Image (cartoon, rainbow, N blue to C red; front, side, top):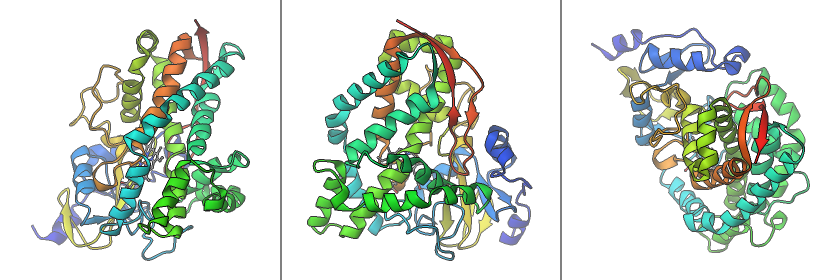
Length: 402
Ligand code: HEM
């Protein structure tokens, strides 16, 4: 069969994964993308999608064919200017990607994460105590899942406490912008005008508290490993890649746990299960569901011949429920070994902040598990609408404290 014939046979899906309807109810779309074929063409956006675990693994590992420097969203940033300067680590390829990656790996090393754990745990315990003092009805989404990462990560980075209300609109726009220029993007852009200015100001060395991780990044610039402008860009990465992702990962874990009394009872009896609970939460519902790559040369993927410069969107959320990889994939199972889920990506761009995210989530979940004997839903969850993120504005719950 010629390449052209392979391509003509490629399955086409006349859907829009970024319509409001899809974003509010994404699981049927994930299933359709994954089960239709290894690779499907979505004409609404002129891109390929894959929801298969093995195909995604192949794309992540073959970073020479599937590059990041043309953007990891829908826009080919080599052809069309993006809304902001590209990230020097996320939207970059070897060899220069390696330099920035080594800096971030050092700044977020296991030793650094261990050093801040005690402080993070104390903050989690204090927040949980404050929230529970208000009575048995709580909203897990804003009161815990948003409030906690929004405090501890910027504190560790050394960001000014004044003005942190800008972090959410900024991060919201950052992820909206990975998708199409639809109404969700334009609304986010209008809401984040001031936020982008504030973030640009916070990236400067003079704005960062001494002793914080932001200053550590600038020390690499002092040694001339990277430039001072690059250091500012890496500080920005913390704020754009590390806040909402962690918030929404924690929320999905909460959603699973409040719907499963047995799982909560197990966690209450043994709060050290918090880490496992979070990992399975990330598998069950990947908070950052899509990542795109662009082909740097012709290749064949999933039986389809691709030309140079084509976009392939990996549906990580779909792959995390691929029945070819997981047994009973739709079930949140605290007993499951979720190793191999793709919520953090994998390969040379695999999330460099994953140990930090796990530690944050473990501190918060274990703090709540120690104080709360039973927990149950107390109303309908309300989803956020974001092209490139899945999470909640509201997750009402009723708790019985010990
Ligand atoms: C549950 C929380 C998180 C999720 C689900 C998540 C998800 C991801 C994913 C899927 C990637 C791969 C992107 C790609 O292959 O193009 C990634 C990369 C990255 N993440 Fe995270 N992330 C989380 C938390 C964090 C945190 C806390 C930080 C920083 C403190 C962070 C910083 C980064 C950076 C800098 C990269 C780029 C790495 C590279 O390109 O080499 N992330 N993340």
